[in-house]
Each structure stands twice: as structure tokens, then as C-alpha cells.
Length: 89
Image (cartoon, rainbow, N blue to C red; front, top):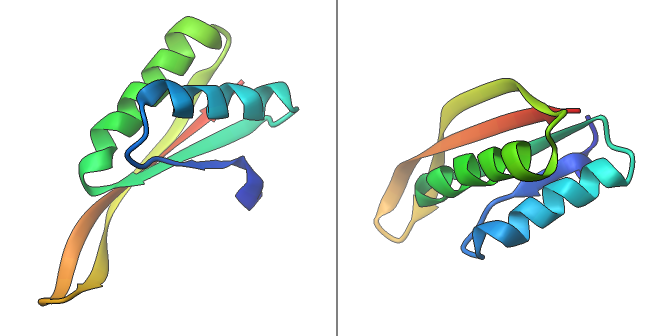
């Protein structure tokens, strides 16, 4: 999978990311990864579910990876949960 087929989830509304996922598939991608960390994880799950159930009926979740990333903050290091959900058409 290329870096082009990755949608990073942030603070925008869910539908913005759903549109990004649908656009990736419409542009010929065979699989798309949705990545998020911290509080955006629930939004990532929403994005995948909305895309799968409303726009891409013939798609499914191929793989889900979870983990922890260390990030540097002003108070030292902090652990942040991460998720990667891979969708295929």
C-alpha cells in the first residue's frame, strides 16, 4: 500500500473523511488505510462504518491494527493509542 492510500483522521467532521475514503476508492485504489490516534480513534471508526454502510456497500474491513506511540510533550514523553483500519473493495 502506498502512502497515497492513507487517510489521517483529525478534528474535521466525519463526512470530510468519508469523502476522502470514497474518493480514494473512486480513483482506483484497491485498499485504503484509515489512521488515527488518541481521541480521534472513535472518529476513525465512525468514518469506516459510514463509508462501508452508506457509500461503499461492496467494501469490507480487511485488517485492524492497534498500538501505542510515544510522543514528546512539554511534560516529557506521553503514550498515545493508535489505530489503523484497512478497507478493501
